[in-house]
Image (cartoon, rainbow, N blue to C red; front, side):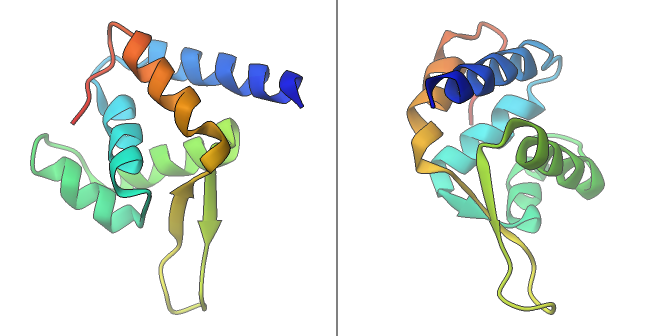
Length: 107
C-alpha cells in the first residue's frame, strides 16, 4: 500500500512542480477547502480571481482524477453533474505537497 502512496506523492509533486501559472495548486486548494465540488463550482471560484475557461478547469479536474488518483467521482443520475471529492487518504499528502512547493499558489 505504501508503494502506491509513494507513487501518487511523486506524481502529485511533479504535477505541482509543472504549475507555471498557479491554476493546479488553486484547484487543489479549493478541493481542500470545499471537500467536494462540481466542475462549475471550481470554475466559478477560479474565474473570480483569474481569466480561465470552463473547459480548462474541466480538463484539469479530469487529469487530477484520472492520472493522480486523488479524487473520487460520483454521479447521481445521467441528468446531474459529476461531483468530485478528495479521497480522505490523501488530504494530508496534498496539504504537505502544497505547503512545501515554492510555486504553489493557494486561495
